[in-house]
Structures are given as structure tokens and as C-alpha cells.
Image (cartoon, rainbow, N blue to C red; front, side):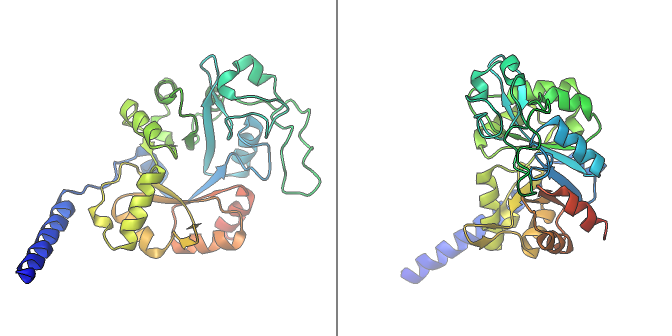
Length: 293
């Protein structure tokens, strides 16, 4: 009796595996990656260790440096403007205090966005104070770099900014130049509903499921909602990025971008491994390495 039960359970498990393999789909197509198919040097916050993060000043320098993509974080002001900053609170990087969502754009624009920048060079952390560097709106970035690929992380959860973000993307016709990401599943799901034509990366929960299935040899069962897998090299002492993960992601039609890589040796190893992009605070290192200098 026990043998028959075990056999039935094994048969049921095999049938379920077969069903999920047959019904699993690949990642949605992303025009962005058709237009930019090669390796991407992605400037994290415009180059966090080089210039004041998430500022027009940083993004201009990154573009002049020759990066392939800009990475940024988006919140919303009290009066409905989408603005760029990593934190929800302005105190870490500016001379102000308070939450972005509780401040008007006029109040945000009065802040010194270079006030607390920590450069890579020791003793140079105050070099950008009083230089007139402001917190930019996302619209300013779209206007300044209309042809530049970007990856935008939705930081704010409440109130939701998915709809105004989608509207701004459509207004500036940036649909085929963006990857939208978020650690928050609900924020990313909502954006996907509003803007299904815009490429997204995978949320944290989606990424975790895919990485686990890849390690178990079951990645073919997964149907990714995102076109890009943006992951760290390691997480919780576990190696995330490997040849197998890359092969499994590529088999599903996903690109693999690794964050946040600032060591030149790690950059070289990842490029040799075949990753599709590296998100870095030191895009200047990555420019030299990717060009073989």
C-alpha cells in the first residue's frame, strides 16, 4: 500500500512538473534591449562615488564619460512632482530635513543636493557644497537626455506613484528607453498594469524565486514578468551570479545586470562571465575595463 502511494505521489509530481514546463513562458519582449543589445555600463545614481547622487550634475558627467545607461531613484513631492533621490528623507544627502513626500517642489529645489556628498577621494566630501546643485525632477532628466537609456527604481510606496510615472514616460515617449524596477512587488505590479509596454526588472520576491529555482535546476518552470534580472553578486553569504544563473536567465529571455560593483577585479570577472550589464558607483573604472584599457 505504501509503495503504491509513493508511486502515485511521484507520478503526480512528474505530471505537475511536465504541466508547469509546458505552460511556462519567457520574459516579455523589451524594445530597449533590441535597441541596445550589448553590454551596459550602468551608472548607479549617476556615479555615487564620483558626484552628488541622483543629480543632473552627476548624470551629465556620466554621459560625458561614455556610460551606456543611467540609474536613478524616484519619489514624489507633496505637490505631485516626480523627483530623484535615493532616500525618502532628505537629511542624508542635503542640507535639509524631512520627507520628500511632505515637501513641495519649491522647498525641494531650495535644498543643496551637493551638501553631504561623500566622494571617493578622502577629505573631499564637502567639495560640492554651495555649487548650486539641486534635486532634479524626473522630467528634467527626460528633457536633458531624451535618447539615453535609463533604469528607474520606484522607491515610494505610499502614496503610489505608478500612474504619474507612467504618464510622464508616455508624455516624453520614453517607453523604449527605460527599465522600471522596485524592491516592492505591489509598486512594480501596479506600474506594469499602467504601462505594459515599458520593460521592467524583477521585484525582490520574483528574483528570489527565480534564483532558488535555478539552483534547484527548475528554472524552466518559471514565467518571468520582468525583462531584466538585476541582482547582487552575493546575498546572505550565498553566491548569486554564476554561469548557470546566466544561462537560465538567458534561456528565459532575461538580461542579467549585477549591482553594485565597484571593484575593478569583480568587474573584469563579471564581464568574462558574460553578464549583460554592471551597475556601478565607479562607472569610470568600468569604461576603461570594458574598453580594454
